[in-house]
Amino acid sequence: MNYLQTLDYLFSKLPLFSRVGPAAYKKDLTNTLLLCEVLGNPQDSLRTVHVAGTNGKGSVSHMLAAIFQLAGYKTGLYTSPHLYDFRERIKINGEMIGEQQVVDFTKNILPTIEKIEPSFFELTVAMALDHFKKENVDIAIIETGLGGRLDSTNIITPDLSVITNIDWDHMQLLGDSLEKIAFEKAGIIKAGIPVVIGESSSTTLPVFQQKAQAENTSLTIASQERTIKQYEWKDDYLWVTVAQQKDSILSLKLDLPGIYQTKNVLTVLAAIDQLQKKGWRLHQDHIAKGLSSTRLLTGLHGRWQKIASSPTVIIDVAHNEAGIGQLINQLQQTPYDHLHIVLGVVKDKSITPMLSLLPKEATYYFTKASLPRALPETELRSLGEQAGCVGEAFAHVNQALTKARSAAGKHDLIVVCGSIFLAAEVNLHEGNVPLD
Image 1 (cartoon, rainbow, N blue to C red):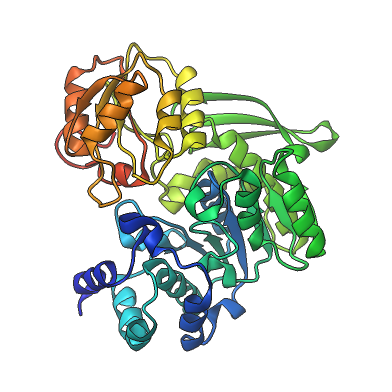
Image 2: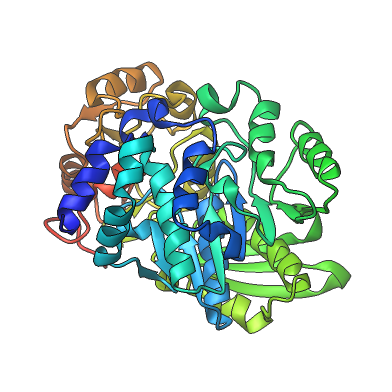
């Protein structure tokens, strides 16, 4: 098989969560362990950082990878899902895994695939670990896919575990309470391995404390270590002033400009503290330069990403109630004449709570991503109307975006949101949606 044939095989043969939802979720680590055993257990020879959480885990993973890379370390990065290219999931120093490497890996592991029938995610985790071992990376930043305890990535023993936050998402798989969701995320906490918690609440903190105590390890709450003194969004950057212990002040410039990154940067800084104690040489200039060039170095897309001007077009992968809440905070601090929202969601999300948060004065363009999990645009329009969000329905996101751009004034704001997979289908390079 060539590369395209290999991808077609992987996408068609293996259950893919982004397409079929919970049916693709394997509730144990057996297949991942079997795959890695065939590969010589690459996870056992890698130094890693493990990142979980409801929101923010992708941004935190990319920020950490950028900092390590600028510190001179050969840095692996595993994240999911991808937006434009499958190989985005597996990178070393910002470079995607090669097409031939994907082909060779699949060919090598094919008998095991046919025998145990792993999920798509289980296979890509094994592919990433194998690639990082073969390329002899110094460190690999590993983002969980879903949950933590039973997530395929949870076969690693990291230098540090990070849990960004806990909120409502994937309740049908992780549990119907924040305590149950926190329990699943806390499953990445391991014996003697320090853990950093980005945000916690009176509901979730006891879960983390009990797990850390049971594993005899230290627990750091990032929001208790530092606070955001002030921030400003200008020139497509987020300028942040951080108040640290002993009354010191840290000024940072982030090229991930979403205001919600103020929370993520505190998590990153707390993680760096713990990693420095492990002997990693991560200095202040590495941190500052890494945070100011995360998107450039790692290729992260879809986090309050501006893709066009006059009118301004923003893509954001907010796709659950907490993410939409953060998006609303950003909108409240963004100047514009009129707001246009291109919205598409997947069926297994809590859609009504998201719609209830969205501004009713905006003009809506309801659409869907091209996958079976996507809620049909006409159904979304009906739900939107019930919530007071009025607009038209479009079969494809680029049709919706073209209509929004034709209707918008040059000082209006257009936001595409609701699904990672919707953001991935925005045409960045052709037609009416050029990159600035």
